Amino acid sequence: MTAKQTLKHILLAAVLICGANNAFAQDELRQTFFKDADAALAAADKAQAKLLSPRNYERGSDAYNDADQALKRGRNIDTVRREAAQAAAYFREATTAAELAKTALSQALKSRQDAANAEAPKLSAPLWEDAQDKFGDAIRYLERGDLKTAKRKEIEATSLYRDAELSAIKTQYLSGTRKLLADAERAKVGRYAPLTLDKATRLLASAEKELNENRYDTDLPRSLAQQANYEARHSIHLSEVVRRTRDKDLSVETLVLQWEESLRKVSGAADVVPAMATGPEPLTDTLVEYIDAMRNQNQALEQELGENRLRLADMEAEMNALDEKLGGATAERTALVQRLEAQARVKEQFEQVEKMFARNEARVFREGDTVILRLVGLSFDSGQSAIKSNSFDLLSKVEKAVNVFPGSEIVVEGHTDSYGGDELNMKLSQARAEAVQAYMVNAMHIPGYRTLATGFGETNPVANNETEDGRARNRRIDIVIHPNLNGTDSGS
Image (cartoon, rainbow, N blue to C red):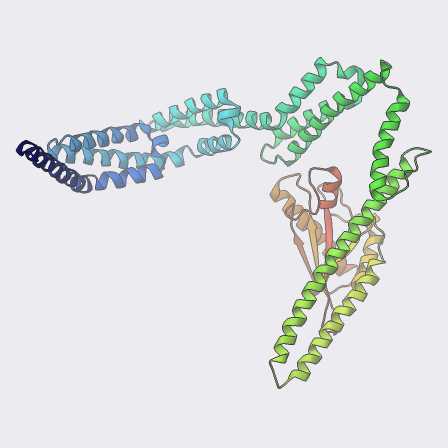
């Protein structure tokens, strides 16, 4: 290596060492001078000061950047210290102003978040931007100390945010159906399938009405919109079928045979004779009965499987425990035998109760040793909890079923579908459960200490809330019977 090359390497090493020392020094200075500014910035970000106090936040950011640049360029230390301190002061002011804005502009902030949750920035951009402008005005006036004008601007922003939210919700639920109906109108669907098209139009109008009246309970309007969407597509399909029959492209006889072929395929899967000589109604009834029977059979098998698993697990655990003991085994084995006998007794009682009810009155099933009477025949007027006189015969059967289990504890469960507000549904289900409980105490003379009423609202559905039949099954009273397994009657 030549002397010239050696000198170059020495100079390069010196530069690197100086650079490293300089970087280390800058890090030390940053930790010293920016500590308060960094803490104030973190507090401001946590308080959403960039949104709620933009002027102070921007001033703090500018001072912070000036201090950072001054440090990197090796400017006077006092300059760095002064700019960093100024940044911290502005950020603290921004935090204080932001906390004030959260209180003073709380309604606008809530409406803004609701609109954002409904995707208003994307689905209702013009209204969202107008609301943002008014909200920005409210913030600026508040920063200037003009609370009166800020509150006026907040009211305007709140109104616009709510409009944007509602518009976005309608876009989510209604726009697709509106497009379908527009397509149907252009295709002259009303000429061939007016009833179905009219039904779709009325469902869409009902969905929009529900959204206007209560945008925060979207279960009902969403379901109505889905039904409207279905009927709109249905009307387009029907219009094509009707048009083909009118144009003689498809005979009515051929159309009926095509529909019967679909039922025939279902009948084949169910191993049911597809008898339709007098129309599809008898076959339809047979298939419905078949499906109901399969559902009940499946439920019974699942129930029996669960019971067997629990029984085997309990027996295995207790037998293992007994085998490990030398003394007292006889008494414990006797207790186990008694328990198994009690479970067998409950099964016999269950089978007795199961025969008491017709299918349109109650479904009877078990979960372990618990017996559940699902009173499908017990109904209430909409929004009401009073028991109607036409339910007395069914409740008389419930009394006989409860008496099969002397000394049992009874829980009356009230359930609703998903339509209506969550809080309202919870109160309604509780009121209905309490009405049935009161009837059991007063008319059936069941001691109050053996009964409990609990409302679950819409939280425990047993069927699909998106169909009318499913919602009907979810609106129910369940009588949950916990048998007395010790064999003694604690009073009836």
